[in-house]
Every structure is written in C-alpha cells, then in structure tokens.
Length: 215
Image (cartoon, rainbow, N blue to C red; front, side, top):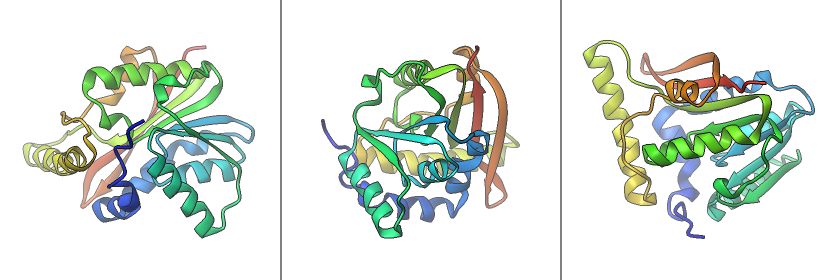
C-alpha cells in the first residue's frame, strides 16, 4: 500500500496548528459530546489523533483506520510522548476495505473526505454510513462551504485552495471545490441533526456536521 503521507505525516500536527490555530482541533472534537460510555466509534483517517483520544477518555470503544503507516506511527508516537494509555484499536487499511457494516454507534470523518475527488468522496461517505448501526451518528468535520458576501466567499475559497494545493503537491490528494457536506449527507439518507461552525480571523472557515442514520 502506497503511503502518500510519508512526507507530510511527520509535520501534520504542526501544519494543522500553523494553518488554523486551534480551530481544526475544536472542530474535530465538537460532536463527541454526543457519545456515551461504551459507544463504539470509528475514525476514518487518524490525523493528529487527539479527537480519538478524547473519545476514548469519554469511555467510548475507539477504532482508528488509516492507510498511511506514517500517520499511524505518528499517532502512536504522540500517545507515547504524552503518556496516554487509553485503549484505541488501530487498523492499517484502506477504509473501503473495512467491512464492519452496522457495527458503530458513531462514524467520524474529520478532514478526511476532502482528499478525494467528488465521485470518490461520495463513494467513501456512502461506505462510512454503512459502517454505522441503524440510528448511528455520522460526523463530518472539514472546511465549511463558502457563504456570506462576495469578499467573505472569496477569502474562504482562497484559504481552501492554499491547503488543497499543498496536499496535492506533497501527498497527491485531489484538487476540487469545497464540498457541501450537509447536502451530500442528506442525499445519502442522513438526517442533519446539528451543524457547528468554527472561526478563523472572524470567518467561519470550518464546520462539524452531525447526521443521523435512519433506524
């Protein structure tokens, strides 16, 4: 399996903080307050992993799945460095090969779906929904769809392309427009329960979207 994050992985945490301050972290953990002790939650893409740690500390049974060995090693290194001993199951795999259908109370895709072109993004989101139990929560945290006046939208789009072009150059991620995740989630049968926005320089640059799978 090709590790696209071999170059970017070691500096991923620094990049996140540099580009957003703490906004991305706040976005990633926003919807975890819906978890209950004993809930099974899957994180697609480990990222810096502190959202997964937060979920585990809340008493959830946590699984993280990532195709990048570099990102998983970085995650484990962070756990060891901080002395974090909560139990987290780590799976080194393509998320599309995870066949644990209807096994999870919550499925989380934080800054994960944006690595794909639109057609593949929809396929991955559809697969993630299948991993959730009937009635499961499906969470997507990412760059928010541009709204507001012309200047506000233009700044948000420029900010987005700064990130997407960097990851295209160094990780081979797809270059595409900002996705309107709530619309796609509704098209795939989810009920949108909640949306929370997170600001950077007075602009709502990120959002966390919570969808509910039908029972």
